[in-house]
Length: 296
Image 1 (cartoon, rainbow, N blue to C red):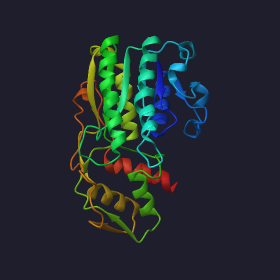
Image 2: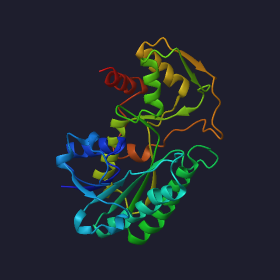
Image 3: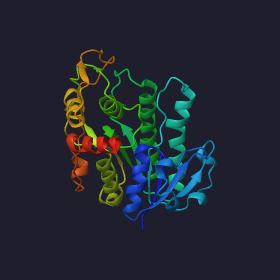
Image 4: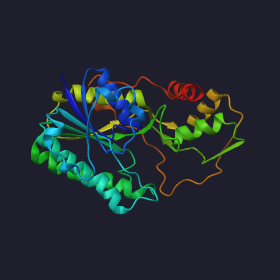
């Protein structure tokens, strides 16, 4: 049986990944803070081996974790106003380096790092410290994994969405606004193209990477995780508007673009399709599930 170490498993993506891997018969070990809520994992928490940490993960004794085959690192800290530079560096660089080094000691042959599609866009003035920290850890990962002979998969995740995501995220905000009967929804012109990937597709892609990791050499890889197709924000919101049967006025062009706005993004999914994975959800089918969950 494959034994998998997860960070960030109490979050949106992490909880879905934990549940998906457990359903596939994978043993899951999760590193979390003692204060972390298990609400998203309430139905599967008894099946997970949790290892708590208060500060630096290198304080952990490896026998608390035990031998693992692979690691998926999903824990992250965003660049919010109340986050200091030190907070971001400790969470997004020092912590994952510690986890990477623990992975060596626990016998893992593969480290999967969940990156973001906009971290390599240097002129995009959105969450700049967060993006920079993600890039810096990726560089550290190349060096440390190469030295240890570890397979390092840097997964650049496109625009993830699905039921249960944080309410301040783009898709939940749009759905909530449309369902609440808000008179007007102010938006940019909506010409930006995004590769929207439904949460279930993302989980299945990560499952394919873990289960078929021995089919490719121990090296460093950039892997795109999306559908390989982009949709404009305008079209995506119009789909949600139609599915909710909302009467909210969509005011495209009422808001300016962010500085350095990324106008087009889509993943190169050739690495994943070579493993036999392909996305199963369209914006229409994914949004329909999100809306049904919200209404239900």
